[in-house]
Image 1 (cartoon, rainbow, N blue to C red):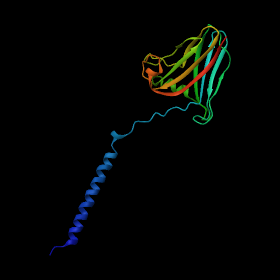
Image 2: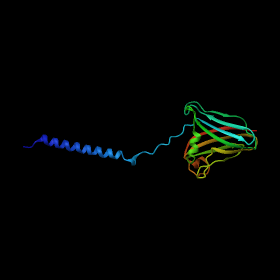
Image 3: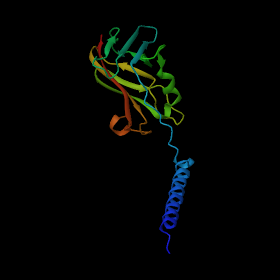
Image 4: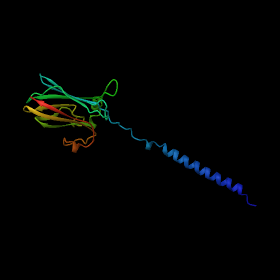
Length: 193
């Protein structure tokens, strides 16, 4: 006589073994070192951009954008400490902070360390003759934490300072050619006297 209970037990055992073998294969596969994700380089939180323009032997003008609520509803507070002199060169230096941290985190240091992955771009209108880079990364490409701004005749002007993360380097100096992602962009209205 044929024993159906014994057959069921054997079939059940085979299914259990197959299931355990399948789980083991997937378990070993999921633990493979090849599938470890690359560490994510999180985007910096930048609440404050300060550009200090120092005239040789003369005045210092500060341009600042503070947006303490980040992507919140409040607009950034923009300040320009005074007018620029006509037909004058200014040494510029940019500082970036994350003031949501206490004490404030100096993002400038991170930009300096990862200068091959960052570049500032300067777009101007009105009576600014030029903005030239005064620093570069290890490959000789511009960064823009230091720059020289030269004014023209008296009148109105604007400067937009944009920091791009992972731009194409070298590039032609335009945002469209550089690509990458914008970390911060701010326009300042200037009075040149």
